[in-house]
Image 1 (cartoon, rainbow, N blue to C red):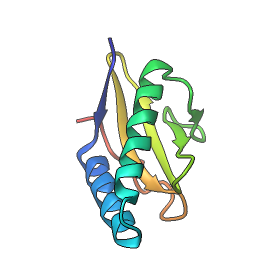
Image 2 (tube, rainbow, N blue to C red; image 1 turned 90 degrees about the horizontal axis):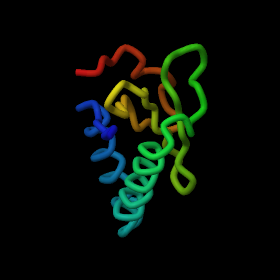
Image 3 (cartoon, rainbow, N blue to C red; image 1 turned 120 degrees about the vertical axis):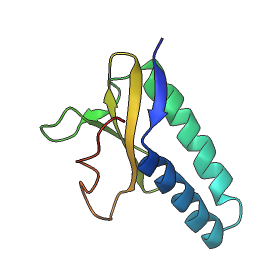
Length: 100
């Protein structure tokens, strides 16, 4: 069975997003985390649900409520989350990350 694994930088992006959202509106961090966990579970069940990202091996899946995109790669035994990126900031900054 596959499992979801986040790159360390992706984990930091989630923490930063939650901090920023909570500062904007109390309670938003919890809503963000709930949606993120739901999408991770969806991606785990249906790994190819996300659209291919350009000509790479990565896939992307946008959050419905928040302007963030989950970038991931399907590996043999892992769904590797490479980035949880704000949709309007620094495109493709994460592209050089490796699954370590």
